[in-house]
Length: 58
Image 1 (cartoon, rainbow, N blue to C red):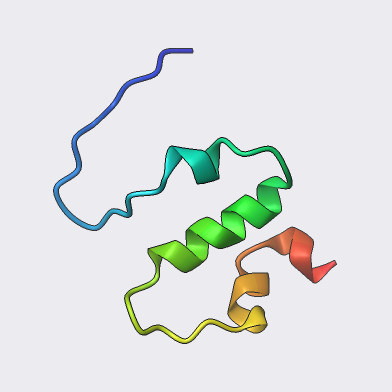
Image 2: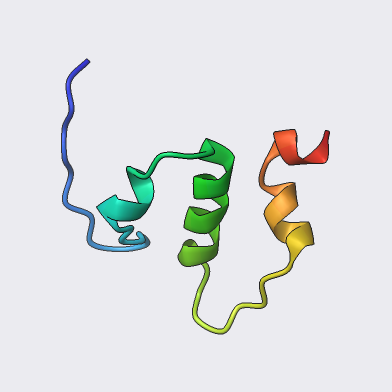
């Protein structure tokens, strides 16, 4: 596998390495990343967060 970085100029979110690399549930980290990707002022409730993961519905 080759790791390649690409400079993005629009429609992206900056996520802290500390969040992405922490130990724990990948689902929990994924939900945190989803929340951080939302525009400022977006309402955050359990339903939309759960709908982003097929595993959350089981």
